[in-house]
Figure 1 (cartoon, rainbow, N blue to C red):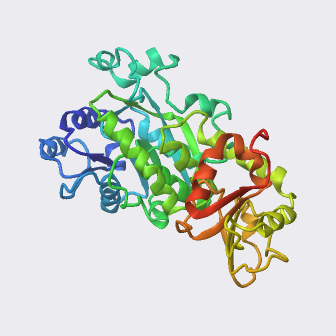
Figure 2: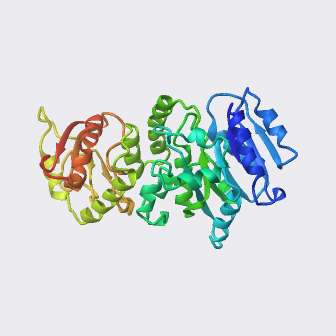
Figure 3: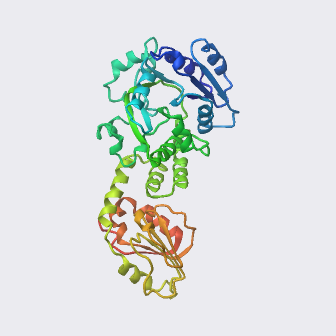
Length: 411
C-alpha cells in the first residue's frame, strides 16, 4: 500500500521495482492511495495495470491527511497482509518475499514487521545518492554502500545495541515508521488503523505503533525486507515544526509518563539522549523510589500557612507515592495525588481525593486549580533533568509551590 501526493515520477520508479519482484504478480496487489494529487499520478497508475494488480484509492485534497489516506487504502485492499511503503522508497526483487518470510517466522501470533530503510536521513542526505540510483538497481546501490554509516537506517545504531531485538526495548513503538512496514490486515483493523486526527506531518505512525505495542503484538525489525529511500524535496522546517506540535498530541491521546517524556522532549526537538534512554531512567528510578514514604514531608509542608496566613484548601502532591490522604491536615477540601508509578492507581481513594498517573511534566489538571502544590522527594531522582518542566507545571496548577528536598540535590 503506497500513500502518495503529487509525486508521480517517484511513484513510477517505485512501481518499476515492484514489477521486478520474484514473488509472482498474481500473489500480491498494489494499492496506490492518493491524497488528492493534481499531477499525472493517475496516468502512472494506469500505465502499470497490465503488469501489476493495481488498486486505486483517491480522496479529496483537504490538506495533509496521510493517516486517512493510508486507512482508505487499507480498506481497499483484499490481501490478508498489508505492506506499507511510502512513495519514493525503492525496493529490491526480494522485498515482498522477505516481508512474508518475517511473518512466517512469527508463529501463531501476529506481529508488526519494520523493514530496514537505507538512505533515509532528511536533514543530512547521503552524498551522491541521487546520482547513485540513476542507472543502477536499488540492490546494486545497497551492495555498494550498505556498510557506510551515513547510508544506514537512522535507527541502526540504537537497534544494534540490542541486537536488533526490539523486544529488549522499553519503548519499541518509537521505531515504528510507516515508510516500510507490514502487519496482518486483521490486526491493522482491530487496532483501529491510523488516527485520522493527525492532519500534519509527524507522529501518526508512532501513535499507531504505541497502540500496536499496547495490544500485545510483537514489533520486529527485518533487515532483509529493506527499502532504499530516494532523495526528494521536503519542507524540512515545516515538518520539524509540525512534528513538535504533534508531540503533545500523542500525550493528549495517551496521557501518562512515557508520553509526558515524549512531549517534553520532541516538542523542543530534543532527541539526544533518545526517549528510550529517558524512559528507562524513569523506570529505574521508579524501582528505587518505590518504598519512599513521603507522608511526613507532605504533612509538614501542608501544615504551613500560605502567604497571608490562610490554610491551603486545595492541594496537589506531585510524587505522592502511596499516600491515600493527608492525615491530620485540617481544612483540606480536595487533594490530588500525582505519581509516575502506575501502582498508584490501585485501590479506592477516600472522598475528596483524586489521582493522576503522571510524572508531573504535564497533567490534565486545570490552571490555578490548587492553592498549594507539593513536590516530594520521590521526584528527586528526576530533578536534574526535569526540574524546569516540573516547576513550570506546578506553578501553572497552583499559586504556591513547595519542594520537600534541596533543589541542589543531584538527580
